[in-house]
Length: 71
Image (tube, rainbow, N blue to C red; front, side, top):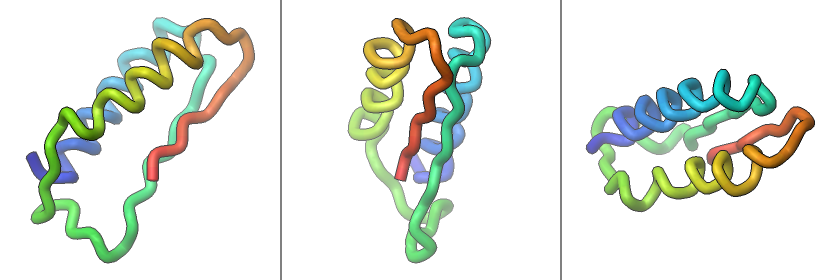
């Protein structure tokens, strides 16, 4: 899948989890300017586990506002 598609999937997942966790986190996704998001590709299995683990095992048990940065 293109990196643009991966970014969409990650954003969709994080936006889906925010209300469930009472909006106790924000996130920011940054992509280097040299990367062509529409052309370059990567496997979902390399990216998706990181934000998922950050939410499920890091943020879900916290009561204060947190931030996930994906670079």
